[in-house]
Length: 120
Image 1 (tube, rainbow, N blue to C red):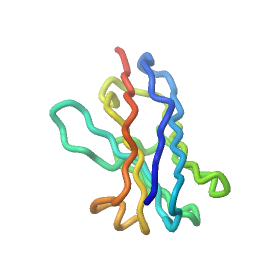
Image 2: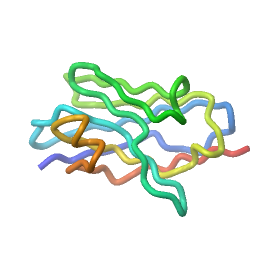
Image 3: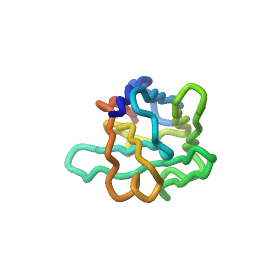
Image 4: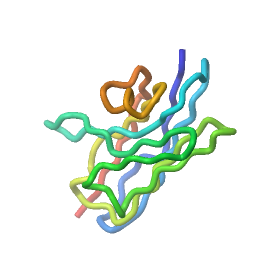
């Protein structure tokens, strides 16, 4: 089993920045880690993903504003969010799986979620 613990969610003004962190523990045979988000009344969407080798994927809506990175030694993934918009408001969930493909179609492991609220 893999446990994922997120932190860093907060209330921020539009145009501001936040950094989310997620640390994995337990059975660590995972390669891909990433961040999903779910806004009220909307489906959960994959925002960004990263493999252990550093390959990254981003949703079009966050390209150029969000940066995903990871510290493999600490089993931690980060999401640096800049130029935040009110439409970025959502619960952000850390996710992990064996590959980015599996992460995209339905990850096996989820964090509990952290709230990000962007005020206009």
